[in-house]
Image (cartoon, rainbow, N blue to C red; front, side, top):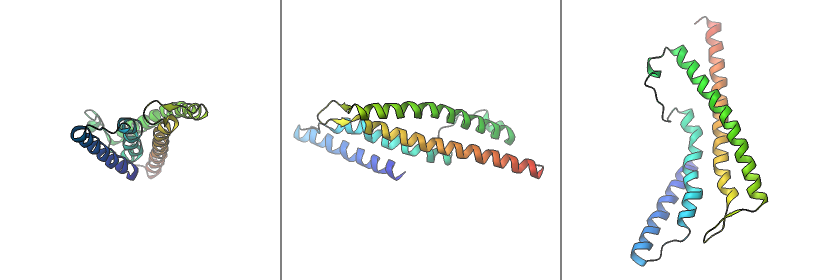
Length: 154
């Protein structure tokens, strides 16, 4: 969350500075859009995914979920966590291959400053790996709590 906060403050500072320079001095910051779009927005979103999942602060459609018995809620949560983890394995693999390709080919974002594309790929990759780890931990916790309840006879 610290990384996300730093990226948010940096984004706000750059936008304020860019707007002020653009409208008062007719001299916008030429690299502002690329930096914000390519790095800072990803830095705001992806590092916060695992924490939001851990604290259940993400958006959840719970119209029917709220009426489920606790055992069905556990099964639904487990199903969602396993499904998301499986999907993340696929996405992480694709991002890793993309990262390697961008790094090996020294790809850059065309613009005033040639930003390396592999740095743009690292941010979501790290965030999604953290989210995957959180989901795997949630699955293990759910299985252990289910086993404990079965042993207690609850």
